[in-house]
Image (cartoon, rainbow, N blue to C red):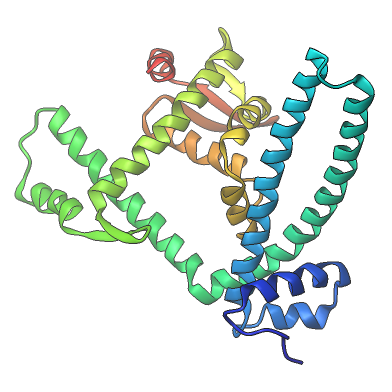
Length: 282
């Protein structure tokens, strides 16, 4: 079996994949996920997801405009209700199609990531960031304590600037990557610090599970559809939950909280309330 389009004809691929999503033919999807075609399939399916996201924003704006026109009397309530019903029908069909698309894209995305070596790259990037962050923390501790750095200290710190790693389309020093990572972690850390303080009240220990609902409500809207899709492809669960896990680790490294195991599940000990307050207000 061969595909009825060339490797550069994304327009024809778009229409073919659109029809194939409804047919659910296993052999066709096996071919679409093969090494010869998966990068094009991945590219086209991403474009389909992007188009859905753009259309959803457009329809949301249209509904808001129609609502305002109805309230001002520019259109009748009957017209507004008719348009709303049509929008609901269209939204239901789109949601069904998007579910089919995301279900298949998890398979395609994983195959494309393996072919590109993205999983290995991500693991190495995480390792570089972890090592760089540890070196940066060591430098800060030595200098803040007023100690005289040893030759070994200075040689180690110089590696932060001397070594570089991939950064998007280019490269950046490990020191730059660590700084950007810390800034992003601090952004999430501010949010989490505020949630912890609100949930804890006067308590010094709270269940970790008590944070999840408020965290998801606050953080999920800030995550793009592309970020969620990319993470879903990795098969590691919820992106918002993963962000919570990493942000808790960030607060632990700052000495603000500590996770502990208890009979009722994981708990969070507030070690430095003033530090949490300062972070939440920063």
